[in-house]
Every structure is written in structure tokens, then in C-alpha cells.
Amino acid sequence: MLEKGVQKTHLLARQLHFFANSDPDMPAVPVPITQVLDWVLEHICAASEHPFEKVLGRENVSPTAGDVDFANFDSCTGSSRDQCGAFPNGPAQQMEVLHQELNFVEGVNKASVVKQASDIQASSVKVLNCHDSMIYVLAPLNYATVNGCSDATIVLGAVGKAVRVEHCERVNVIVATMQASIANCRECIFFLGVNKRPIISGNNHNLQVAPYNTFYRDLELHLAQVRVDPTINMWDKSLALGMVDPHDSLSHPAGVSDGQSESASFLHPDRFLNFVIPKWFEVESPRQQTKQNPFILPKPYMAAQQQKSNALEDMRQCLRSSHLEDNKKQELAGAIHSHFKEWLYASGNIRQLYCLQNTELDSTGID
Image (cartoon, rainbow, N blue to C red):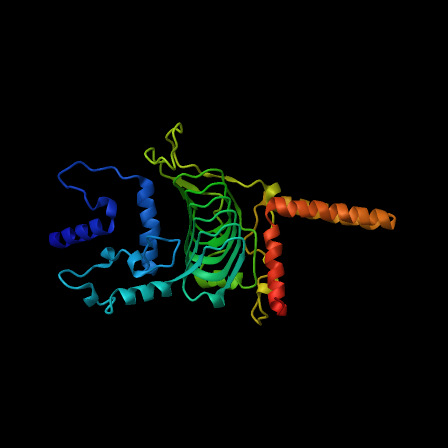
């Protein structure tokens, strides 16, 4: 039993790189909790479902055999890795398995990408280095990662295991998931339908969280497939873990005192808007369709939505009952159109219109 315990200890040290050089005769070296947390979220959780997925050395390019650290896969001693039962054909087979386990949406700039369930051939998705774009991944997934994105809106379908968002700036993320993890992000808003407490770690600034705010045709079907319960939403119970590393000059600039990782504030109900996913991304289906947000909104957000709806209806009634001359009606319509256009650009929602326009042209066969 003792020998087995020693073997397991050596295996753990080999897997946990920050313990690998520890000397049992020396005092314990402190390890930042954020480093341990990052390792757990990126390796242990994923390994339970995808034992072959590895963190890539260069996430902004497609993986190659040289990108993968094979040392942690080596469970055979005194023999060639090619003789291991898991990968009898060596690194080539390992990379093939890796590609089967992952889908990448990468390097999108000032464009829109739509991925539906029929387009996703794996159970995990990585959205990497996308900027000023609209990304829709409307599919049931086990894992999703969003890394290095800015000025983008990213809509993920139903994620049954975990979502990790890191190193993003001015990004809106909309996702229904079991677990969400956020690290090293700035000025981002997260619209969450999440069954467990969201975890926030690392160096973050001006993060906001809000309840889930959208739906699409197959959302409830996808939620059931990955076992995410829409009656449970812990979006407002985030857990901030770890301390900002004082030795990291990038995440801890001079003059900033040591402190706990910054948590997220709640998006004010008056700023909460429903996000509409275009229906012509979908095809007709005899299956029962989701017709509304399956996550119930908290009362303050529900009241704010109702207030906006009432104000819109009052304006419509006022316009219908007004007796304006034709030229005045044209002036009023022009003023409304101008203010709406200004709002589209100021809010960034103009990107959605470009997306809709391109999709409509594609559907009619027009270049």
C-alpha cells in the first residue's frame, strides 16, 4: 500500500507542474490559489470527460503535434510512447483525437459567425481571438472556452459541464451552463443561466453579471440533453477566489495594493435588454420549439422589462392618436430613425444588423 501511495504521489507531482520540484525535506512552498484553481478548471474537469484534451501552447493557431505537451500523457514507464495502449499510432493519432474532441472559432474580425448543432462535430468549443464580431454557437456542448476576445458578443448554447472565459475585454457573453469560470477580464458583461455559483479569479476590472436574456428554437432541447436545469439560476451568487499576484507586473501594476480578486457587480435592471437571435438561422422542425426564455427573470428585471414595454405601447398610442400633417409625420419619422441609428452605433448593435443582412442575402442566393 505504501509503495502504491508513493507511486501516486510521483504521478501527482508529474501532473501538477507547480509541485514537481518540491523537496519533501524542505518547507512547503506557497502556491497561489489562482494557479491551483486554473489547473483544476482546465485539466481535472476536462479530463473527467475528455482525457485526451490538452491545453495548447499557442491557442491562437490551429494545434499541431509540436503544440501539445505529451509528457503528462506518458503513463508508460521504460517503453516507447507509441506502445501505449491509448495511442498505438503515436502523436499523429493523438492529434486526430484532439481535433475530434474540439471545435475552434478563431481569429474572427469584424464579422459574424453562426454555428448550429449540425455544424458542431465535437463536444467542446474554443472561441479564440475574435474581435468586433458576433459569434453564435447554438449547440449542446460539454465544455466551452472563450479566450482573448474583445468588443464582441458571444452567444453559447447549452454547456453541460463548464464554461471558461479569460483574457477578454468589452465582451458580452450569453450562456446557459452548469458552471462558469471567469478570469482576467475587463469591462465584460455576462448574461448567465448557471446552475452553480460562478467562479471569478485573477485580475478583473469592471465586470457585470445579469440573468440570462435570450432563447432560440432548440434551447430547451439542448438544456435537457446536457442536463442544465433552467429552474436553477445562481447568476447573482458569484464567488471571488484568490489574490491578485503582486509579482505580476501586467495584472498588478505599480501603485496598486494587494487585494482579493475583484468580483462582479449586477447590471442595473434599466440597462437589461432581451437579446433576440434571428429566426432565419433556423430551419423548420416538427419538434417542440422554445418560444420564450426558460430562465425566469428576477422581479426587478421583470419589472424593468414591463416598464419598457408599457412605455413603448404608450408611444405607439400617442403616435396613432396624433393628427399631424404629412410633412410633420415625415419629420417625426426622420427624427426617430436618426436617434435609433445613433443608438445602434453607440451600443454596438449595428453589428447584428450587418449579420442579419448578410444572412438574408445568403438565403436568397444574392452575392
